[in-house]
Image (cartoon, rainbow, N blue to C red):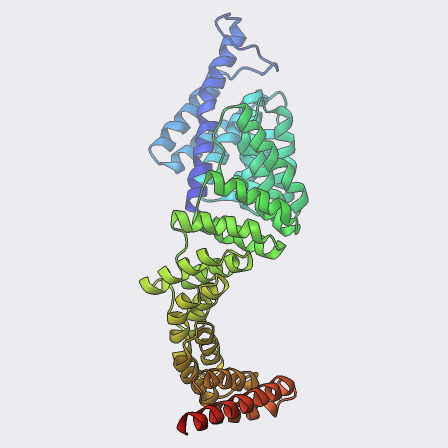
Length: 433
């Protein structure tokens, strides 16, 4: 609020400073002096010396911060008979300045409104007064009055810059007229480009708010992409990533995460994991595994069961079972159920590491809380069979047989184990003769 007050005081000072310029021009016009370069668009009454001198004294008082003295000089002007419209306007202009300096915004508004009631104001004075009133209304939350005053200001202003268009958009935001607020921001951007003025980050942020409130998510994404290209910041990465996710644009989200990873915007453990999961979903498992491995080894990614499991899954999808095993061991050791132990057992089985397979399968079955204990017994039985532990293998398959989902396969294995065991016994018997 203090910054806003300083801004308005500066505007008021400009208005006050125009008193002497306008008065000088009026004198020049009144004497017919051809030295004035500007062509007046309105015939404005001249300020007479007796009024000019009192207002000048009031300004001297205000410059010394003696507002009581300034007020007294203004009262002397107000008591004068026969003031013309221009003199009255300058008097009310000074009243507004004093009221604003005392934080008396209602009186400042009333005084500026009195300025505008005077006929034949200089165009410059009317323009500045209207814009000041527009902002005072805005500060006082009189948003519709602010919007109406700004509309009249546009009618008299010459070559407005982008800022008034942004003010108009801000008023629409306060009125919750989001659709109406879009055009002024686009106008501001266009004007800035025509006038070779620098585009402002906050303009695009405001535009983005309007699109978001209207649930126009494609345009939210377009604006965010513009922002992130021009003012690259982590906060915009987070917003754009969320929007890509909401719209189901996985490829866009992956590209954004890769940019964020390259420039160092990823800070949290879950952001690295999210990137790895996106890569897995896009069938890019090697890059996902490398990101997870680097993060876990460096402590950037939290060492927990789920994250080690993501790393293991990435290596498995990359058909790198051997590289997946260390991650699976870590994940299984942090798991309270036996699911990951069984996955580890399966990886050992794929690598023909039978003893490790047996150990992991037994660990998983012992921990329990399994979705498919029958599958665990099938893995265990197969690995036991490979090391010729026929009896233990048969027991495992018999356990699996109790589940209807594995019954057919388990029975086939039991027959195969029995046949192989019989063949082995016959071979041993023949060798012992």
